[in-house]
Amino acid sequence: MNRKSADSACFPVAVSAASTAPGCGEIISLRKRIQLTPDLPALITGSGVLTWREFGLLAARFQSLLQKIRERTLIMTARADPNYLAAFAAAIHLGKIVLPLSPRECPDRIRELSEFTSGKIIVPGRLAEALPTVAEHGDFQDLLSENAADTPVNCLLSSGSTGTPKLIVHSLKNHQLSAVNAARALSLESSDRYALSLPLNHAGGQAVFFRAVQTGCSMTVPERELPLEDCVAKYGLTALSLVPTQLVRLIAAAKKDPEAAREQLKTLKWILAGGAPLAPETVREFRSFYPGVRLFVSYAMTETASLAFLGELRGTATDYAGTPLPGWSFRISEANPGETPGTGEVLIRGPSLAQGYLRAGGSIIPLPLRDGRFATGDLGTATPAGLKILGRRDNMFISGGENIVPESIERELLRIPGIREAAVAPLPDQEWGSVIVAVVKPDPGVLRTSPSGVPEFSPETREYFRTEAGKHLDRIRIPKIWLPWNPEWDQGMKIKRKAVAEYVRDSCRKRNCPGN
Image (cartoon, rainbow, N blue to C red; front, side, top):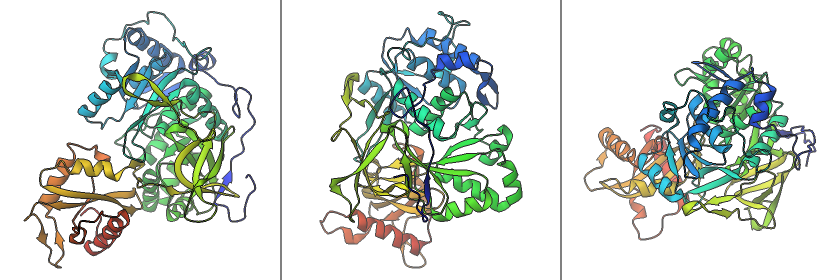
């Protein structure tokens, strides 16, 4: 498994053995982190710096209010700011279950989740206005790390492959063990500055918090109005977790002025790329512009509390997920084989697998296991360089680092007045991984004919569709390209996804998409 191949694109990452749990080292709790490095910066923003002592005191003040809330589940909008991070830390160490949501989440959806979980909606920014000057119990309280670390404290929303939302539940110990593994594999140190550059309602973004607690490194919030390369230079960032879209933007900056771009990224040690496969062209260009920055790939999912497999890219073949981190293992299921011999569904086992799924009212359904392993729904194969992921067993694709389920978007598009039928498919894109394309059948008379004789929607119609879609979908899921329905599909037969994908590619080629 750890043997290097001359053609390998992904090389195993050396990680030392562990003691506290299978494959893991000593866990550093937040209380202990505050005691060990009280004066080191915990959080750096454009507004200033919070030391670990100051962060702990802010979290303690939030605890004074949160411990009075009867509900076990707290629903919070996840923002990369001191109030959210402190409220999150406060709640999970009191034994609350925090459900973080995207700032883009629509109010109706938030209310639905509140009813489903019997949870309370919390706005940390507003709660901060009522914080006591001093915490009622003095220092930060950690009611779990010593004796109850297996208590569920966090659930993350995942659409899953079927489009049915799942609330994936993790304990504090899950996150701590994941952080131990990642910190050791990535050689994180207290002197590092790690950007909060991924959404905090996702496992990958949230993991930065737990890795910072484990190592004492500084969480750093890039300013949204600044290009990422400017933020690296301004804050001296050393570590980034990115999706391919962000990596492409760093390449675009280097194309304008290679020397200036390299100077801006001179403090950067490594980038952990995830969320979607990297195009070989993207890897080649990144290496040519930033040869001193290490580029890691990983295999992770919400059910693993972030990283389970890690590898360093040293070539351009990018479809490797790395080798298992300590305590993790995988096998390829023969029961669900892939299209070629030696491929099949990836089954995994490891120390930070989720406890299960939250269901109505707050009870937890244990994670379904097959012979002690979790069936990921991904097709893969074992190689000398590690695990190679071949794709999903279903229709899901990724755009801008987000999992996109076509059926869920189609259902929402059919709610738009004037749309009779809808099909959604991805169009490969270097920056976004894939862009979302909607193929819709409108009311009669809506289509017009282009100068080249191709039926199309007017700019006004496309804008109407986008506006109406925005009432039902968050921004990342609003289709970027709108194409007219294929009349050949009106034959009473079920439309095949492959046919939709082929139609999208052919139509976009004729119409010179994207962005139509």
